[in-house]
Structure formats: structure tokens, C-alpha cells
Image 1 (cartoon, rainbow, N blue to C red):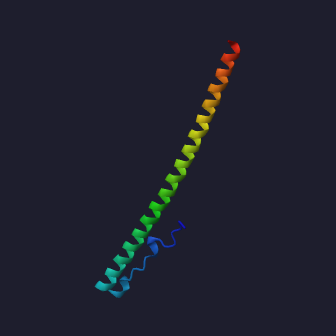
Image 2 (tube, one colour; image 1 turned 180 degrees about the vertical axis):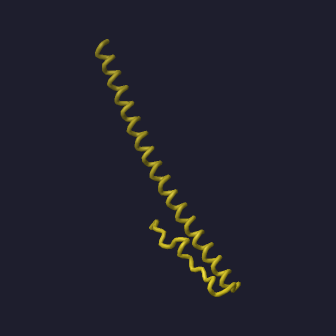
Image 3 (cartoon, rainbow, N blue to C red; image 1 turned 180 degrees about the horizontal axis):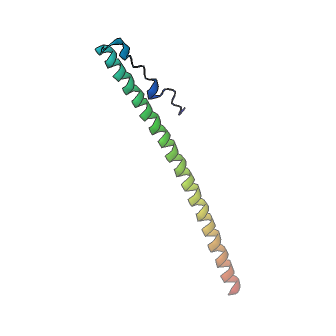
Length: 83
């Protein structure tokens, strides 16, 4: 899904046709499409990473909250036993 099958190095520039204006225009159009595709894929990937990080952070928060509540509970029990 996140593979980049074409690189800028493989852009089909056709300078051997001479300075054919239509060819140059096509090349710029192709380059723009590649760039937009690359940016779109990068944004998707970044979004996936962000979502993954958020879920990790929330699971870590939940675990530490649980540990804190268990610690407070055991401290309270210890105090109650001592009293």
C-alpha cells in the first residue's frame, strides 16, 4: 500500500525529441502527478503512524492508571490493617 513503485529517476523525460513544447508540458504534468501522489502517500503514512502512536500512548496511560489505582488500593488496605 505504501510502496513507491516509480522514482523521480525514472521519469520519462524525452529531451531527445528536441525542445518540443508539448513534450515538455507533458513531462511537467507527469512530474506534478508523481509529486502529488508521493505527497498523498506520505500524508497517509504519517496519518497511520500518528494513529498508531495515539493508540500506544492511550494503552500506556490506561496501564499506568490501573497500576496507580491498584497501588493506592493496597496502600489503603495496609493503612486500614495498621489502624
